[in-house]
Image (cartoon, rainbow, N blue to C red; front, side):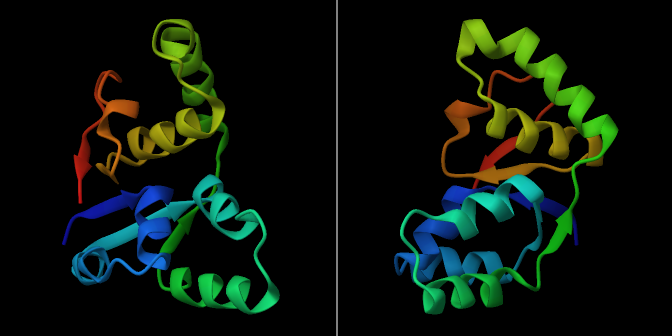
Length: 124
């Protein structure tokens, strides 16, 4: 089964009760990176119980750490696409993780990524 990087927005919809995405995600060899993990656990005003539930839900997903190569690739992406497309740091690190690991990114916002050459951003 092909490995795929799962964007933060999919998890957010699942935590808001989207059972369809939950079912689809269970059929994917999903991965997250450090940025996605941080975005999920910092989540605004989470109480301790909500934080525990989020951490429990994402535990099965392999977490890919930000390596030097991912960081270098993210810098290049921001240099290329920051001004023209508004690519921000978190999305650059997510996109660079998918590029470096050679996996597609599964997201609900393909428009945030579809301009990045070599990146395959697919809807869930």
